[in-house]
View 1 (cartoon, rainbow, N blue to C red):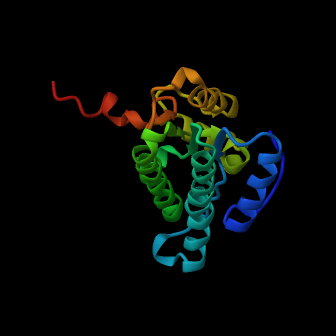
View 2 (cartoon, rainbow, N blue to C red; view 1 turned 120 degrees about the vertical axis):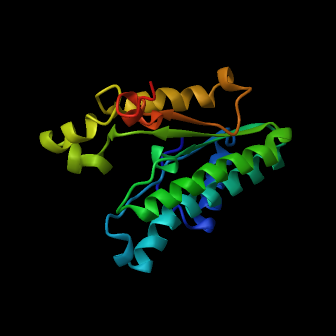
Length: 204
């Protein structure tokens, strides 16, 4: 692991980072985990806010993946890319339009790259966290009332942890997932199962 910080939307900085990685033996796995969100009514959202979220969440992931794939191809070796997405690539998130759009794009970024480079031995998968205890969610994580409101919509009735997301990410990066590509694994306590159908929409 090479700890560093750089602007994810800067192609030049990503290339410079990869040069440093090469000095340590080269890149084997890329995990795209940069993400931000900005709340607000969609009809009042400034274009600058929309663009900022897409730049970090989607454009940055594309730039990093592009340079990683160039590296894998130049080295003539297989590689792994894991895009950290969200349940909101499937579930709309009102008042977080740009975030939802960026994660929907992440799904097709993952699938398209997976199909295009599978024959090269490059695997591209995604992880789709649900409601998770992380700093980006502090507004409800640290508020017992808001947290209870969030967790009642999750079939498993609790938020996930960053450790649970890491375990799935590590699996996708490992040889145990050698025959998996183009998939997003949702780690969400059942949130993408349309939980309202559990009782309210019986057709019996």
